[in-house]
Image 1 (tube, one colour):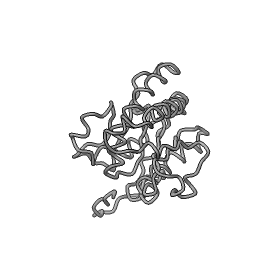
Image 2: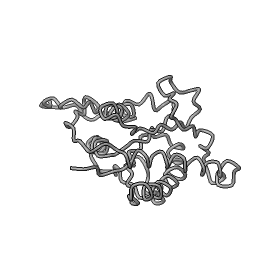
Image 3: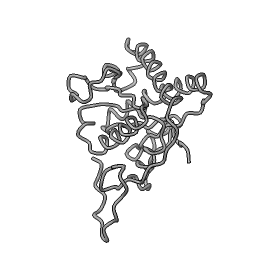
Image 4: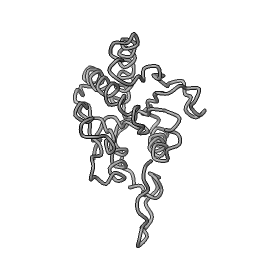
Length: 216
C-alpha cells in the first residue's frame, strides 16, 4: 500500500469559520502547494483530505480538488482511513478545536506517527487569537492567521488580503516540505472506533454496539 492523500486537513466545523476555510484558505493552499511540490519533488497533483460531511453541496461547488467524506459515507471509517493514508496534517487551531474529541484524536494520531518516525508532518495554524488557545497549542512552528479570518466578500478588498496571500505562500512552502519529505508509508492496525483512533489493535466488537456518537 501507499499514501492516497498528501494533506489531511483537521478542523472543528463551525459555520462561519468553515465558510472561510472553503472560500479562502483551501483554494490558495491548493494552488500554491501544487506549485511548490511540483518544484521540490515533482508532485504537481496534490490531494487533500477534507471532511465535507457537514458542507452543503452549494458550498462544495467552489472547492479545490479535495477528497473527503460525503453524505451517506460511513464517516468514522472514512476519517480513520484518511488519517492513515495522508502524508501530513494541517491542524487549524481554535479554542473549540481542543474541546472536540475527534479533532484531538486526529491530532494524536499524527503526533504518534511523528514521534515514531522523527518527521515533521504536522503544520499547526491558529485561526483564532493565540491568547485564547490552551498551552499545548503554543508551538514555535505555528502560523498565526487569525487576523485574516474575515467572513464575506469584503475580505478580497481589504488591506489584509495581500498579506493573507503572502502568508499562504509561506504555509504552502512548509506543507510542501512535509509532503515531499514524508516518511515511507507504513500501514497500522485498524483503530477501534470506540477507542477514537487509538492505534492499538481493535478489540473484539460487542454483539450489539451502541450507535455512533455525533462529532459535535
